[in-house]
View 1 (cartoon, rainbow, N blue to C red):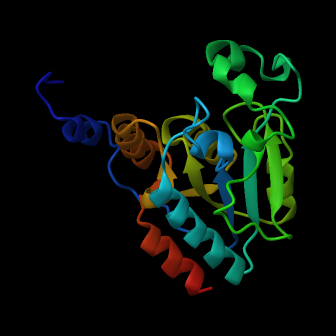
View 2 (tube, rainbow, N blue to C red; view 1 turned 180 degrees about the vertical axis):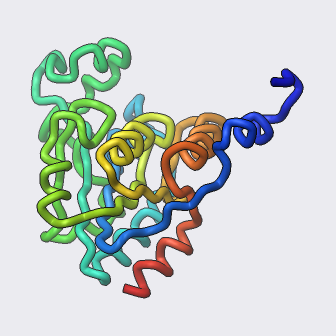
Length: 212
């Protein structure tokens, strides 16, 4: 392999080019950690992501209109020292701010949360790790996950990886995910699109839901 090859050439050489898998028959939406602790810069974990929140809410509203299951995840610790997060909180001590029943674990009020939506609390990056998500999606007959939220390089990516590993077609709407780092956001979108998910425009996702 030539060390001067571009990123695109390297991935093409490995056969990791755009290979759309598309939507299945029964989608669900997983909204990853659009909670105050991640979207309010007063928290050390928080970022200013107004456009991401707006796009994400458009997808949620379209999902509601199409009668698609919607799951909102929250990263929450229920121990004073975040012992339930294990090494994750040792690596990122600011996670200890995400104490249960505080403002930081509340879903951002710009999101339209319906009473039928499921709120899922997690202690690790992936929405699948140690949670009821997989069994619930299987019971609902879901075959496709639309994953959105934050952060692209962290909890979104981990959830996407586990979604694919568990056999779900996985879709990531570009504008409906966000990160505290533009560089990491773009790099992880590229990588997920090459290896795991269909990374497509939010407009295309909305068109899909509106066609249901």
